[in-house]
Amino acid sequence: MQPGSHTKRFAVLGHPIGHSLSPAMHNAAIRALGMDAVYMAIDVDPKHLMRVLNSMAGLGFRGANLTVPLKEIAFRGLKNLDVSARRLGSVNTVRFLPGNRMKGYSTDGKGFLVAIKEAFGTSISGKSVFVLGSGGAGRAVAITCAAEKASDVVVTDVAVERAKRLSREISRVLPRAKVRWIKADRGTWIKECRKADLVIQATPVGMKKGDAPLLPPSAFRKEQLAFDLIYMYPETVFMKAARNGGAKTANGLGMLLHQGAMSFSIWTGRKPPVKVMRRALEKRVYGKS
Image (tube, rainbow, N blue to C red; front, side, top):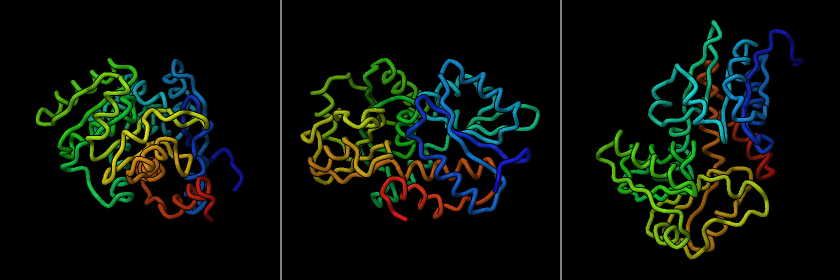
């Protein structure tokens, strides 16, 4: 199908954006449903995000996903926010409405929960959780874990103030949740990581080949779950360190799939072809057809 003047347009915005597999997933869904639509990737400097979103609204785009480092900027810049975005303090999905209006959503939390269940066959309830990284995605999963009755949520970040803010916000919104921040110290990270039932890697470290892991194998142990939000490699440097330490590991491909399927439904009102979307992602990451 050749794009034309009536083609519905969708996009993922980020900075950088070359790593994104969202176009492969969404364009596969579009083809499967026979839609006259296209999904593209656009690199957007954070300082220009709101201007770009307003331009997209004027150009007739139907929806957009947001990735690093744009989620919190959109949360602060959009006036119309779904309860999911307000709850998590970030926006990963924008729906463009008639009259050049926009509404922000977050599908990260629900996508994360489905991915954890799928990868490890368990839920968050009753587990102690260590979240490394307190940016848009990190804050979404930390808040989700607290809301899902994790026994303890520890957050940290190289930008310590960001981890402090996140800890305070969770305590304010969920006063019964047990949450705390820790300083950006390797020894402290290793100690807290080993104590956790579930370790979540929510930083960009590992997106570039050659990146060294933030945590060594000694930070992990048997009967531990380790989940990396990075999805473009079968095994990330974080996952390798965790596996060598005895933990069971998973990358973020499942989270990408399920949050993307939810975004697709928000934009189109149609049931997303999840199996088709999964095959497109697995072909890119694992070489599966």
